[in-house]
Length: 255
Image (cartoon, helix red, strand yellow):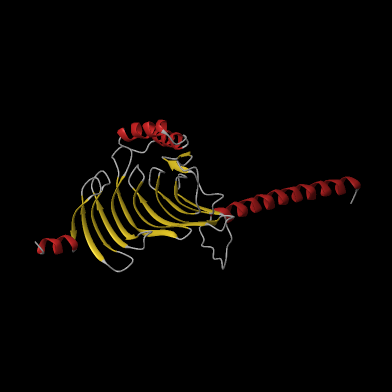
């Protein structure tokens, strides 16, 4: 075999090697992408994660499970804004089809340097395009605690980003007449809620059922105090007792 034939053979082998390399590379790329697109269930014995986002195919959130640091701000129709309180909490947040927050399950506690503490746990359901409508919650401030079921009446006015911005600005104002005037102006727009029902245990260790009017004034209170005394109170819009059982019934029978 002369030198020219040897050279041709080497060139042919090099071309074959290039073709093999290209085919092998393409095959690896296809397999790599397939590993991300195949629909298989993965099983884990244990997983550590700071945040999990459950989203629809279009990317809209449906559920977010997060720690405190990565907890999301308020999301309304896919747009993020700071909460009126300025604080986020660890927990689970649910979203509707519009990408708006629609409920949450949260639990958090902290202890101060003086030994005081604050603990809270809440399961919240939001009114459509508005804020909390029903909540099962526990709040404890250094032993001053209450827990129960709350139901609110909320206006039909949607909780828009503009209204949220106004609320945040007002809450940052110093206490005083100007802040009160701003709150009254905001209240005239019909954006505030009124508590209608409370069923639970109060800070005074009484088991209580409160039924309120549309303005949030308690009108009927059924309760058993910390000493075990049962009462049923009927109240006027200013909180004054107009009739009480058994005291009023007992007083009437004496006349």
